[in-house]
Length: 115
Length: 114
Image (cartoon, rainbow over all chains, first blue to last red; front, side, top):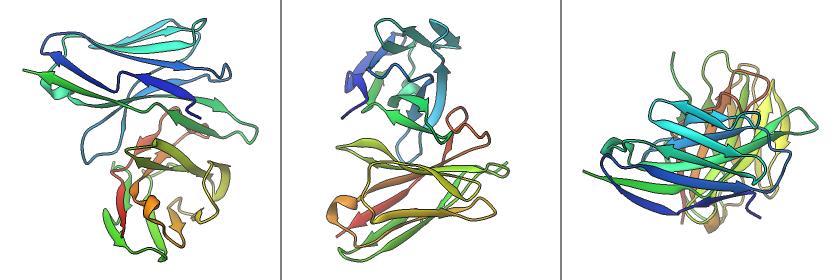
């Protein structure tokens, strides 16, 4: 079953607009929530990440909003640019009994920013 | 510092064959994780190695296996290939013992099974 649910599947935004991608999870043991950006032909690259002890984290034009009680988190891209056109994945992780972690990914959002 | 490298970048195999994919982590990184990416299932965790030991394994059949060498390089093997194994296989490395905080992905190996 999908441990992290992501929406929308695709998103088209005008240049300068705000792109918003949402994710939801069920497992309250998750304690790390990263967002990855993937361009065609490339592997995912870490964009920004948050831990549940804060409600918001901002890095440049990218902001994560985290709602622990609702078990939801979202990525906001301000002043979206054509160069932001990529697929975005949210993810969540938890520490398991062996001390290892693995990332559970959302299904991805293909963002297209129109000039 | 060089990033994560994966070889080969593209591979075409036929059903029933086996395949070995290679991953060289960033220098100094000791943790290597493998993921399978498909349009239908998205990114799914295969397994993770740290200091030559498999610490975690995803929900994949036993045909999928891996190992890590003393220099942290890792290989994954898929035996008796099936059409559904066609995917992009991604390797990620991490410096820290806790793998998630700083995972760096390679460009992937595109496997096509005919």
